[in-house]
Amino acid sequence: MTHIIYIWYIIVLMIPRYSLPKMSAIWSDENKFQKMLDVEILACEALTSLGKIPKKELRKIKSKAKFDVKRIEKIEKTIFVNFLFCANTNNAIKRLAKKVKATRI
Image (cartoon, rainbow, N blue to C red):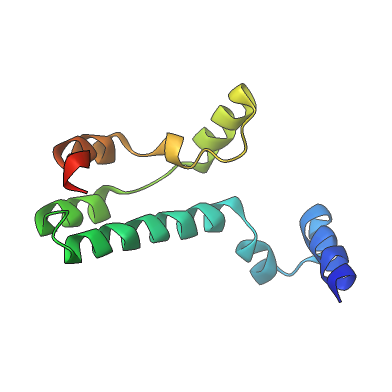
């Protein structure tokens, strides 16, 4: 069974013409990074419920959180690291993170 899944995975990712648009969308970088961002926002929501992040800051984080796939790809090509979602964090989020000090988390 594992071999079948592996072969299917290779066909879908390596040969786009064999993949349906909905299936390709699932494996796209855009979707991958969006899911990562969703997890980060959920973590912030959990910290807000624990009183570690103010609700006002959470609203700002949610409204300003974004990423740029092209920029992530450019950074990955430059420093040869495959997992740079965090390096592409929006500057507004970085400024908000400074307000919510690490000692509070």
